[in-house]
Length: 538
Image 1 (cartoon, rainbow, N blue to C red):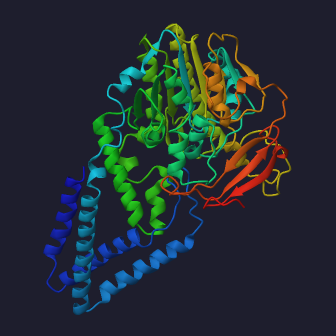
Image 2 (image 1 turned 45 degrees about the horizontal axis):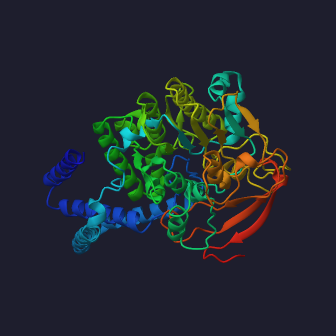
Image 3 (image 1 turned 180 degrees about the vertical axis):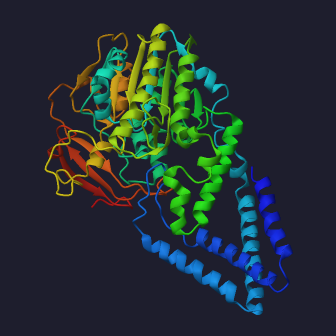
């Protein structure tokens, strides 16, 4: 993808130099050298932090000083190149050649040292024929565990209780929706081990050690596997390393390009890398136009529109493949865990569930549209299961790992003058702590009901083990054993996202909240312990 544009650029730069006079050419060469050096300086030294590029808008009014620093450096070095005498011109060109040579050597060393990682497909741990096997169910007993990433509980409640949500509600026969469900963490990273094992990370040990202990130990997946179930995993490739620490029969990593051709995928990969590189080496004031509110400069012009929401549309395509290829041919009972990026930002769907034409702001309105589109596909899968006669004998858990970044309705408490805090809490934090949880037991066929028991995501594994009648020592309490109005102290562990959290040895400070009562009532919340970065308790 890069060869032809590179040839064109080199020819243009070379031809322009060829037609210049001998007196002008050295200065032209010096300007090219200075531009190259400044690109290197901008991309490797002036690395400003713009947080994670996941679809959220960047507040360009913050850190304006970065632009003045960048602009000052660019103006200074370009002015120097134009005004420099011949001796300085030669030194600048030699320095640029040295910088280029240094990058070449360091790049070569990186390739040599990282050869194993660079030549290893990170998805090789997926089992052969996993996708075909994933479509298969057992005629005896099944568990379908769907984690709809970022699906907020109060948004689900609103969707299914609206007039145009009646058909979706009707498609959820046998389900109990847990309206007062509390999340364990605001993000996926630590929620996965919590929901699989009931164990909570509080910086008590390095993250990798905890994941090995929690997911590699007693989990609902290991309990199902030990009970004779075939365990199928279909999860994003970025989460595969976590889930596959548990025992499984088949593992499939859902790609972000399942809904397009390989040629289109190649174009997207090339334009994405180009945009990211351009974003890195451009001065601050130009980055806004390259990022283009997540539409990106090159991707939006050369890629198919749906690429801007790859995860959502790709994972919807995977749900449709589950529906279209469903079969009942497996002899042993089956446990299927599906983790899909559906309601998670970026918000890219319009009311017709097509690409909206741009990245939409993450607000309640857009989150609700995307959540409804996700639920339509999930209910369509349930309808197909009914037609195949396997809905009744299947235990189904439809849940989220956390809420979305959209303010929940009905948050109770005294509001600050600026509206940023309710009862001293950030409403967005409360929203992230309110993920969806709905459960259908085998042979349950009544209309969907709503429960207000005080459930927690930490109870997930124990609840599924209870529903499957497994003899397990998994931590937590079964939601099925909770009673309405029963008082309970639940815990939520809040920490701020850092861009290096996935590779860090420890998380940043984790603040514990004790919740005794309704999730959206800030009077239910009180501050607990603070777990410091190195595991100390403060």
